[in-house]
Image (cartoon, rainbow, N blue to C red):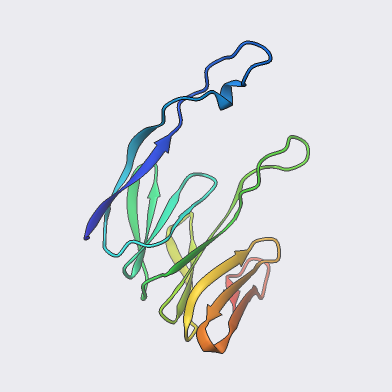
Length: 168
């Protein structure tokens, strides 16, 4: 297809419950569906969602960013088959864990290339040739990304300076 729609399933708000019964956030209700955005492109693939609810969809030679119901295209020189966000999506624990944090980086890999995308600006920060690249996984704590590079094994990416894009 050359177009599509991205849907968001919305759970109904919980209903207050009497004491010793199911809390409001677990009350059973009917989900509703709303159209998040209309997508232009083709050959849609993986989807990644940031903590701030920005959505990224792999497409032919691009990644589509959906933010606030508006879709924009981030052009790439390849068709991404894998997306990996550099986000911390742990559940917040008051006083222990801060909760979900976006680090502003999306990795895309496929057809022998890897791209680092700045999710705030929606632009490619850096692109690399990695023969055989097919999938990527980011490790935000270690600041590494691991790319499956076909018969060549695995390519590792790490920052050379604290605020620089990673290098192989």
